[in-house]
Amino acid sequence: GRATESSILHCTIMVQTRKRNVGDILESLPSDGGAKNILVRVDFNVPLNGSFEITDDSRIRGAMPTIESILKAKHNAILMSHMGRPKAVQKGEDTDGSQRKALTLQHVQKRLSELSGVDVQFVDDCIGDKVKDAVSKLPKEGGAILLLENLRFYKEEEKNAPEFAKSLASIADAYVNDAFGTSHRAHASVSGVPGLMPKEKCAVGSLVAKEVAFLDFSSLGEDEVVAAVIGGSKVSTKLPVIKGLLNQVHILVLGGGLAYTFAKAKGITIGTSLCEEEMVETAKDLIREAEVKGKKLILPIDAVCSKEFPKGEMKMEDTQTFDLVPGNGITDGWMGLDVGPKTAALFDQALTTATKIVFNGPMGVFEIRPFDEGTKAMVDTLEAVTKKGAITVVGGGDSVAALEQFHKTDVVTYVSTGGGATLELLAGDTLPGVAAIADLEE
Image (cartoon, rainbow, N blue to C red; front, side, top):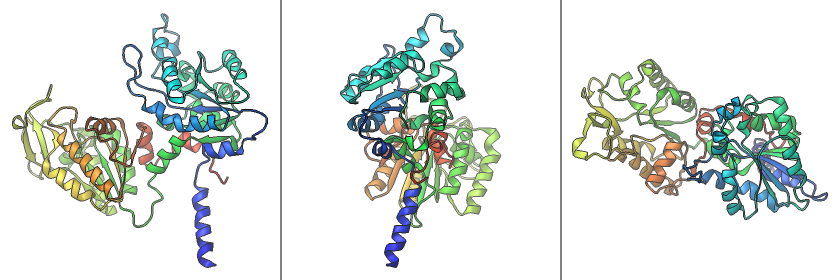
């Protein structure tokens, strides 16, 4: 009896820490009395070209599982999102209506209809009588999608104004947050609305639940070896993440432009490479902190350099690779633009024991050859460890763009959709949009 008892106990503890999700809400809604209207905060802030055509619909596709489960349960989905930063509209300065035209969510209507197989209705406001009217006409048998206008056409959205949140909440029988990309913002549609509704009527959507499960490193087993690979250009933007990760991971690999600040902190010459002078002391502190905490902090040992920032593709023979060793390094007049082959081998070796790896930020200027080699090698490493059973998560715009450039999006376990939200979750911060949803057992 002991063993079963402890495993039952274990299960209860596991269940308690789960956020209420869209499935829980759909199960709890009464099946009689017609369709309920479920308000879903999605992230449809998709890139558009000059003709207002969507160039990447992955954010819309990311929300489809939640939308489909609502329709399948014979309820209606009311979708709200922001698009861009419509400052002129907010200030009443969009006199010719051009910003409103550029950032209307109507641009999403056609693609959403194609993906869902439902004739999506659009209303050109997100609060007020027009919206109430459209909601009142939603079918009692469910299965409809109503898309509201850009939330950020009202400055009250970002201010989390109570009246605005109340107007949004008033049309909803239940609320779902499936906008991971904005869950780090305490806006009206993200934390205001669920604060006004009964907690048993609020949930996270499939996408947010998945993101949180993959990006939360705080509750892992003892045998896990967790690694993070952080690249990109600036130490200052990634600093809270690097600090937060030092508490959570065993191995921290740093590449990209931000590694030169760390190289300088170690007394390595870096030529004209990118360096944030005011961050050198901070980098020294982090190197010390890693030592004290017994963490492996792994930095580049060679760099592929050019005399100036390349305007286009360069030949490898026009570049020079320098070893990065204390007291020596990159010669004056040269700038590091990628990690070298010795570093790629070192990183690969460092990550072979990891059971979970998160990769955020490229290793070099991967958009311009031959400075894509370091990032390409990192992606190959991730592919190899994933095949061996490690869980690999790629987050952040540039890392995802790199995977796409090398046609490798499918070689990792999970590709995160968030930018800032991904970073804040990795830093160990609580996201307002997730915090606003109650745990299931509460």
